Amino acid sequence: MPQVVCYPPDVLPALDPVALEAARAARTKVVEVLVPPREARAFEVPAGRFFRIVSVEGPQVGDLNLHHAHDLTERFFSGKTRALHGTHLSTGDRMWSTLPHLRSLATVTDDTLDWYGYDADGGGVHDVIGTRCDPYTQHLLGGDHYHHCCHSNLTRALAEHAGRPERDVELLVHDVLNVFMCTGFTLDTHQYFMKASPVRPGDHLEFVADVDLVGVLSACPGGDCGDEHSSDVAACHPLLVEVFDGPPPEGWTPSERSAYEWPA
View 1 (tube, helix red, strand yellow):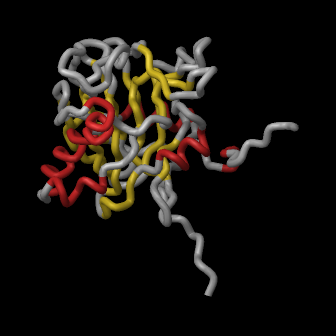
View 2 (cartoon, one colour):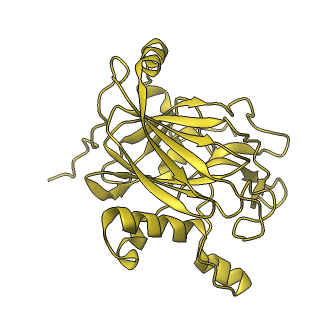
View 3 (cartoon, one colour):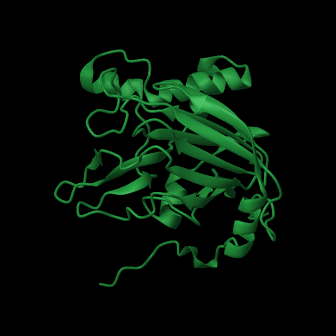
């Protein structure tokens, strides 16, 4: 039987590449946030502005959460993003928000690792199939109490940003975009696998914010995730978030909440 793509994204609006390049050339960097190894930091990006996640010292994976700045409960919906764009994101793909909003939070505008594509094992970069390393699964499988899993890091950073208790914001932490992570499914058992990220210093993943954003980025305790993903042994490096000021691409408009209405 023929395959049918469930959610063909062809009808979704795309950024004009000429307007995009003009806007990228006219911007100025205004904020830098350095994310230490095995920690997370929050940052803000106004709608229409660009931001980048940059590798600065060595191969390092980052776990990214995105929230609407004016309603933290509207957050990145990795499952729907995966259904619309595939298992791994690159230039032109969007990060969609949770129901009932279902709007683009950010659009990928540049990816220096797009050359990687998919390897012979089916592995690709920047996945939306994994969740995030978390202390509950770590305890389930190993019996230990590890406090620098990405879930823990994201929780602490969001709590600090929001000025709220960690237990109060933990349920706002959500499945991530695994920035720079190389992953796929094994061909025999179809299990989630990881391999060493191809990212090197100077590589970046860039976005334009489609709404006012709060982002939270964790520098994963697995480093390049070529061996372990929740560990004090793996070599880990910082990640840099850069936020730019300047005009949005010509023709860009803020992303609107879904216009779907329940029947009366």
